Image 1 (tube, rainbow, N blue to C red):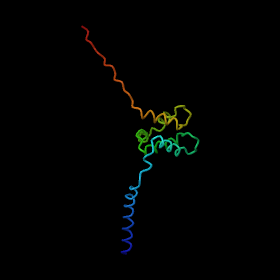
Image 2 (image 1 turned 90 degrees about the vertical axis):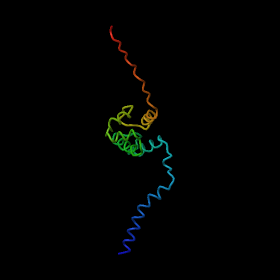
Image 3 (image 1 turned 120 degrees about the horizontal axis):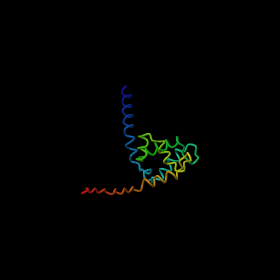
Image 4 (image 1 turned 135 degrees about the horizontal axis):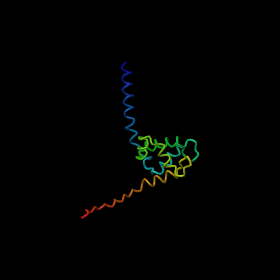
Length: 127
């Protein structure tokens, strides 16, 4: 009985120690740029390999991007706004989203939005 307890203890210790050893490895995948990750996620989600994502494939793409930390797609996934986001990315209304259409949105996201202040309305009392 003592051997079973010892083996169980060693197995549990190994399970907890394995992630600690795995963290010592160099994070090579982190050095990839966002467009590279987008292209890789696109290719992985394009199940029929036709070069565009249909609505179902786009859901897979959106979830993958959210899992990789894309804040915009996290909002899409949390809100379930797949259809509206799919249509927004499908610039040519072809029924599919190409990687070039995603690249346009990536560029738009990286450029800060400039908000012009509204002119203040001056009200003068009638005398």
